[in-house]
Length: 271
Image (cartoon, rainbow, N blue to C red; front, top):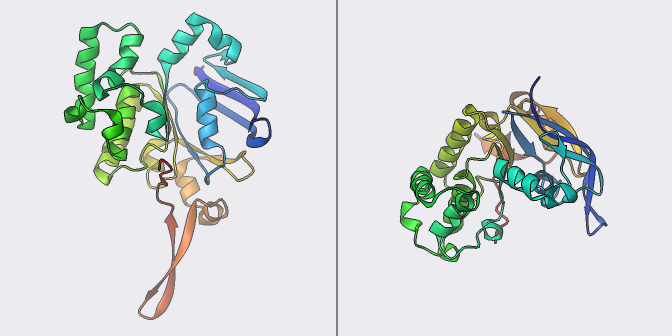
């Protein structure tokens, strides 16, 4: 039987107890699955990732991680907390929320050093991950001096260096140039081939076929209206339009109007 990584049953969550963000969400994630979460802004994707990372807890319903209840009480146990944090890594949508060390090198090495990696091994892993993102020259810089794209790469390197079993990514391609986006997709697929579980919240409909086996669609009512393979979803233009995942543009060719659907570009909310 496949190992269950996460199991959510009728999960509800409201910010400050009055602003609903998730309304009855059921999701089951198996080891090694690639999942994309899509939906318009404010439909609950980021909230779900924060829940899966144990940063917030549901008002009702249950969240299990690796077969155990994921709750405030469970994470208060030092051993459970250590094991969970070691296995699950979240790359935030806004890198400024994530980056807190004085230099890029300290930022990226923070995880492995805190998980008990010796300095020598951490330094070796640091060199390797910096090369992957092509940011070796940023090692001595302060995170707040970096561009949005550079910050994103650093925040990803800081999570990926610890080699977690589960990767949670919130809009990972927003603010990245096409070449870096391409490299990131390749990297996520490399991690998947190594048996990792990858869950990505994205607006970028262009990449979902490459990064997901199944796509969960959130609607404005903040629950999941559909779970389907990406190809099936992308073929259903009417459904995509209804859920604000693509919009229709009218163009004129030879004096005649033609209508083309377009995916929404990745939105960057970090400013």
